Length: 231
Image (cartoon, rainbow, N blue to C red; front, top):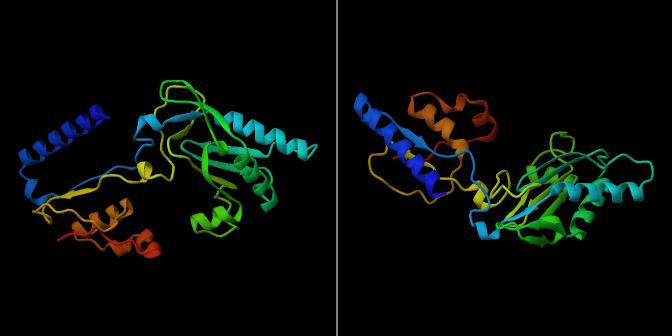
């Protein structure tokens, strides 16, 4: 982590030096942020869990209860979150998967590769069917959301190997909280903004800084996204 931060710091320094040399340091606004964080930040909490074993167990249990049925899990995306798309999109099938995940522990390994077991498939919360739609704030008719959404326990990363030390895509603070710094012509004096801001506010802020209308963006029109706080 320290090497990564040193690299970013040096790169930003080179950028700022080049900007100053060009004579545009006083009339340029620089916005520094990140697309996402990584989890876990504390390596001692890491548990690598092979998701294939969990999915195989779920499929086997489903087919045992429903002879002649295909695998229940049609597609999955699991990093430090679990998203499952099922072959049966009924609420009953989603509840079946939720109950299975909640009832079964999962074997994994820690930062040193030593065996470690987690409860409830490594999940702290499981949403099923319509619960997932409500979580994402969409309609149950929206085919894009998964049938199962599992929020991983702190430190859990779904992977079949022992190389990963972190992942992204989950709902933890380590995943979602990123730095956001605005420096330039409109903010000459450093200050810390304590109110909540989001990276979605960067695009309309750029337009406003350029003298353009942020409300021309469809996302701003639909979601009412505000610009970042500036003096």
